[in-house]
Length: 231
Length: 231
Image (cartoon, rainbow over all chains, first blue to last red; front, side, top):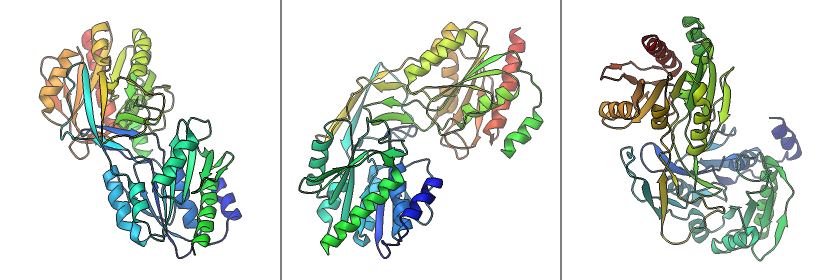
């Protein structure tokens, strides 16, 4: 679209050439039975914008995406997954060869303990679904990481900065992009985002409301800065 | 699209002029917290095809739709809802003035008992979601119906005919469209459907795989036949 063309004019360099960037995007879908599922309101827009921006800047991009209605950006390798377990497997498979991982997917923390092979018939007034924890992909990447730059996202509805800071540290991230999804113009489904960049050691940079593609480029600028510090 | 144009040529009459048709479509979304929800795999395609067909045939169409990525058909009144309770309210509001109700939505049978106003933080290995039953819209319409023709859908994964017959009778329907969503080319997300028409008294008519818009017209033919018997 026109916004993408304008932004591409502003960021013309192929400064990520030779790098492999994994981007995860979208929600995961956790089946309860063949018809019903648990999911979340992630549209995938932020992740697809990250993949688009990284590809324009010359990176090899592996986009690992949960179900979305978005068109995959030109020139990225798309791996479609549905559940958190499938996303875990796909990310771990490609992680050793990656230089940068941007984890913008909203992965379900929990999945139903038992998936019914048949549609559950309704019976009785109440029903209880037992859930068990999904593996924490970001925390596992934080444990495994060597040279990789690890960028996480935090969608919060309260105590944004405290929660974000804790997530950054507990998961050994290099950068966390925090946003309060309750604000208009921020978060799920929106074309814009209002983010706060959170760095190890406590520095935070609040950003104004901006187009998700522009924010994606801003995040990649930060990734480049982090890579230079590392070298 | 081209299929719609061809089918419109085949069914040119405005034989539903003067009638008000309510069509429900899509899934419902039942929030767990501001981010997470329970839903199901309904794409809304069958319901949107029903609304499109009824509008082409001259009916006033009120399309009550859960979240879908579909473009609403030209000339229908669209009411967007999210939860089963919202769909219940919208359907009951318009039911007294309706002549035909086609209930193609896949309404969640259960909703979370408590909706957390804040995003639930993960803690502990397991989690239990307590659900309570949503009102049964179709059964309530069956109780309230006077002159209205009531068409229901049943998406089944096993014992198609037994389950369909029981649904038809317990809900006082005039026609039930049953389909086995496990078959390729049938059910959720597909552009085609493989349906079986089930009538009160036990008659069933299996239909071949067909485009959902063509099936929609076939169902409206049946509705017209039922209206003539009634008069």
